[in-house]
Image (tube, rainbow, N blue to C red; front, side, top):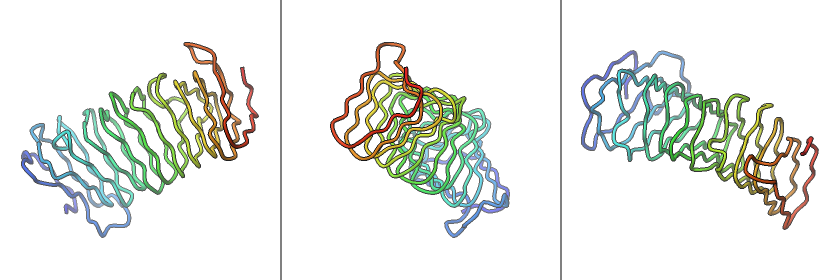
Length: 239
C-alpha cells in the first residue's frame, strides 16, 4: 500500500487493485495521503483505504463502475468535485466527503461513519452496525435499511427521494430536528427521534417501538399506520 504523500496520474487498468495506506494501520493521522487523478482508470480489483486518506481529483475515478471501495481504520475518501459509481462502498469507522456517490450501494458495517458527499441516482443506504451520519444533499432512490445500528440524518440532509422505502430492525433513526419524507416505512423494535417523519404508510411488525419524532402525512396522501405485532409508543406532535 501507499504511505506518505503520493499522486497516481497513470491510468490503472485490468485486474489491478488499489490499496491506500496499510491493512495494519489503526488510525488515520494524516501521514498517508494519496491523490488519484486519472479519468481513464478502469481497474477491476477494487479500492481499499485503510488508516489513510485518498483524494480523487482532476476527474479521477475509482476504476470500473462494478468495483468495490472499502474504507477501514478511520480512513477518509475525499471525492472532490467528482461523481463516483461503484457496486459497493463499504465503511467501518470512516469518512466520505465532497462530490457525489451515484448508483452505488453504501454500506455501514461498524464504528462511527459519516458521508457528507451527496448520495444520488439509484444508490441505496444499508446500515448494519455502528453509528452513522448522512450529511449530504441526498436524492438517492434505492431506499434505506437500518439494522442493529443508529442512523443520524443531519437537519439539512435526507433519506433520499420522498418515495423511498425505509426499513428498521433493532434500529434508531435520528432526524436531527429536520424533516424526512418517505413512501413506506416498516419498523421492528425501533426508535425514531428528533424532527419530523412524513410517509404514506408506517407498518409496525413487532418489537418495542418508541417514536418521539413528529409523524405527518406525506405530500401525496394521508399517513396510514398498521400495527400487526409488538407495542408502540407515540410521543411526538403528530398531525
